[in-house]
Image (cartoon, rainbow, N blue to C red):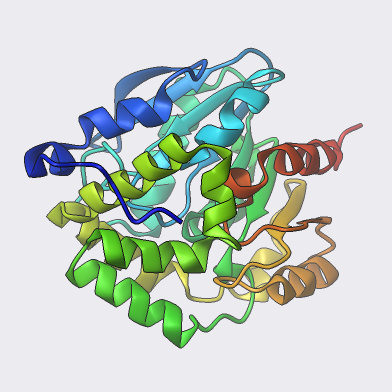
Length: 299
């Protein structure tokens, strides 16, 4: 993978405006800001069809991490991609917790969707999304969880924990590359798909990681979202739920998905040759898996 971020102006790196523009270039979406849960939230919207809300994982860069799959999803759906408060370009809240998240997501749905949406939730935010479905399933059409630690017994790998601490203490090109080695099955191969976009993503991650409120939000998410949700609570989810997982996910092992699928009856789609971020690593296979997941629960 590339170790060159090609960002020579520190002020521009921290601001991230140019980098974000490069990440969104050519996508069939518009960007707006909405006041949600007392925080100015950046939201991408595009496409036409049944609404699909994409929740990014525990990434400093927010919703732009969905970019490689957005164009394909927009072909058959109206896609809504918010940046969680405190991440990406959204303003922070005092504390990101289950209650604040629930209020915020309910407002996202109510203000951007004319009908019940399918909710796709990745990684750390997937745990909060599952809890939202437990309490507010009436607002959702379907739920798809991707690489979510909270749906089973989870212990963060020691190497990943050390990598996360290093990035938190000193966001840099080097610490970002170490984190990418955990997130992607093969960072070099993923970069080869679109080197300019991949390098911009890595640089944008570093730029956001330098912002104090982003670092604070990430710490809050890791603390809250790596805890296991009680099985009795997950049993209460009555909205059709499916799982999509990278077969070689090192951050959240496939066995967690397999156990949840067997216990709760949630269909599981496994994506070959992908790690923790299949929507970036294998976007074509990811969207095909979603089509199968979307069909679950349809009349």
